[in-house]
Image 1 (spheres, rainbow, N blue to C red):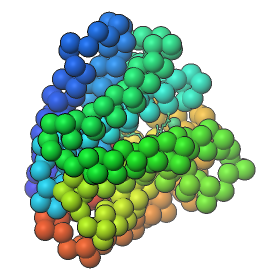
Image 2: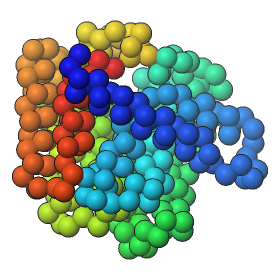
Image 3: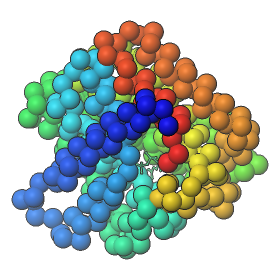
Image 4: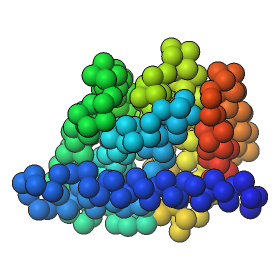
Length: 302
Ligand code: FPP
Ligand code: MG
């Protein structure tokens, strides 16, 4: 491993630990919440994970000279949305998976009904968390409104949920590569785009800077999902914390299914190059971390 890879890996692990600590306190302790619901929510929220989306919120803010602390409630919110989506994605009605992040899936521990509700509650709590950026960190009400509007779009019917619905409808022999691209952009890329732009908004990004973050995020997000497809085929179950070959078993359409592993890998590299180019051309005051994260993700093994 190169020194640079080791450095960014250590840095990301430190950031993930910071986020995990904040997530642990994100549901007010004085709220009366039925114990199994609180437990099911926290089980998945604190199950490890790379915390990439919250890291992207914080790093986009920092790349533009913004305040990391003010961005934190939004970083937590995006991880709540991501975690709810994983809980629901693992349900028997969707991908029916027993393991996630090296642990039993939520419904395997708490039952289907509580897993659905834990997901619902995490989704709702994300919006509570975003508002705290205004209440306690002085982010303007207008920026918070922009962030809430964008999250509603990119996590909802026009975004992640739409992508997931299209994914559920996908079928080998029927779905085209263009349709698969739609699925990947929406079910995965959109939340990454949201994370980066929300961080940018907290740092008062200009229109041009937001457009650069959008280009960075959509290319990186597509690359991330193609890499996810590749790892499902050739990854290490232990490192991934979930069974491999799940797409093959479920006869899912994936990039490797259409174009093979090597071309998929080349596509990941090209998309990463295009993503980095967007940031380089936009001349951010502190672009280094975002560029390092892009390189790191291209080489990830889990
Ligand atoms: C792994 O993220 C997850 C993805 C690549 C996203 C897949 C998209 C869905 C499951 C959408 C589901 C949507 C609904 C509405 C059910 P990761 O590698 O960052 O995982 P980690 O957080 O465990 O590290
Ligand atoms: Mg799925």
